[in-house]
Image 1 (cartoon, rainbow, N blue to C red):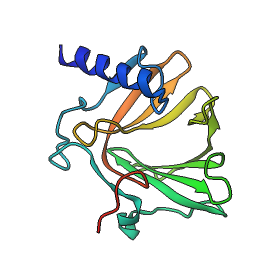
Image 2 (image 1 turned 120 degrees about the vertical axis):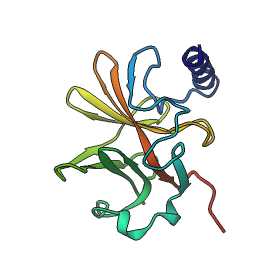
Image 3 (image 1 turned 30 degrees about the horizontal axis):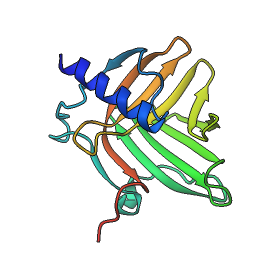
Image 4 (image 1 turned 90 degrees about the horizontal axis):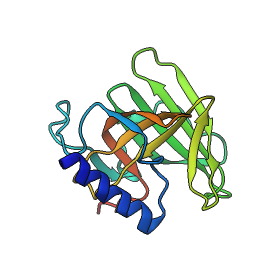
Length: 167
């Protein structure tokens, strides 16, 4: 019942605001932690903060030239940095993902839908960070295939320029 109510709530939000930060919610979703489940490693749902408050030792590489870090996320298996081109913040975005297990790095360039919302395709998969719910539910790192089957890992931390600055 809770899952169905969450689905209806999220669908309403996406319909009202036309947000595409998550792929079509009608797909099959596989979560490691439910949206309102506390993550054992941190004892609560996803910790969110402004990107300016990201500890310097969390960065694992540099952003491409002429770009700045605008988002950082950490899940059980991955670290993700999203960088945006300083010249055109709406059109040049970069996804840099590092595995915590083998330290391999995946670098992707965003593609944009008709509304200018980015996603990060890589062969048969597309990558997303889903962060909604005003901090009361988990944010997720998602990988979806072409048939819309998705695997979602709850984020421990999500730093973004969209969160209010801490004074």
